[in-house]
Amino acid sequence: MSIKFTVTERDGTSLARNGILELAHGSMETPAFMPVGTNGSVKAISHQKLEEMGVPLILGNTYHLYLRPGTEVIDAYGGLHQFSSWKGNILTDSGGFQVFSLATFRKITEEGVRFRSHIDGSYHELTPEKVVGIQNSLNSDIAMVLDVCTPPDIEYREALKALEITTAWAKRSLKEWQLHDPAPGRALFPILQGNFYKDLRQRSAEELLPLDFPGVAVGGLSVGEPFPLFLEMLHHTGELLPPEKPHYLMGIGTPEYILAAVENGIDLFDCVFPTRIARNGSVFTPRGVMALKNARFEKDTGPIDSECDCTACRRYSRAYIRHLFKAKEILGPMLATEHNIHFLMRMTRNIRTAIRNSAFREYKEAFLDEYRGKHT
Ligand SMILES: [Zn+2]
Image 1: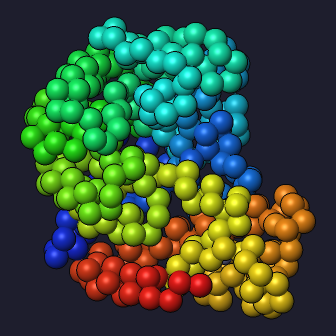
Image 2 (image 1 turned 90 degrees about the horizontal axis):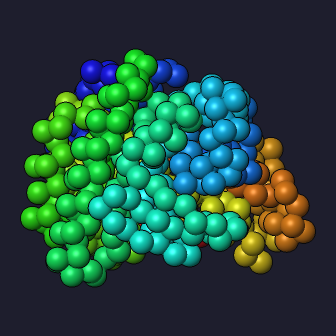
């Protein structure tokens, strides 16, 4: 096994569990939220601040880093850790989702995907083997296989075709990964797809899990579907996952989605949403999302959240941070970003404590009652 994952506690009333994931750049407790550092940088916050908050892992986007600065630059440093001076772990996605969502043109064949860069319009081709090679250049602690991510509401035969290609690409990715004899503490995860068809989700699990990857990711959820459908598919998929391996749900990062994910046995999750809304002046609080630009905070001398001990809440008032946003000062997005990551770090710590006490469901209900009850 290339990485070690130990389930340390189980909630008992749900699939929620605590674990320790040991990777090349340190051990981390799960469940864990992973901030997204698209270009090797989590927007509007320094690596030093993330380290101080105890963030054990950040994401990098293979698609973006491949297009800019390119692997030749990163190869000169021996990987993304040294290039970006990040001491913790790095998970990189495969680029499949960005090709699906960003590229101005794309054509998927059984060989790979051809697309036009959203930056300069240049043509590129990614194959499963090439994507493994790029992630080897990045020296990702967790790398992902190239997959075909599909939108909701597509027809069954289209979802089936995407699934068949995803499985074939996972097999090719694994072969390529093993050829290069990866260092201990590094791992490649497959991505379970199947769109919103339960039998295809099941089939994806049946095809990918026997390949014995050291962990598994769930893709293609939280892509615009209604929340009840997300919950239904997550519950169905959660029960298919091998209990002894780490489970990563791609692209979720709001409190309601995190609680649902953990309840269904998810250990790792990431999303750009918490840092993106922060840059627009919206922050998480125990009583819901607060839009700091709102006029009612103009003379509000209190902190964003009196229970939070991040820099923004310890030192500044809502009125001052609102002023920073109105005056377009860079410090505004920086403080809001730190607060939102801090909020999710504290929330996941509380989740782990609740699981340790076999009280996850009570924690979840109490959290949601407060979060949904009095939106500020
Ligand atoms: Zn705070």
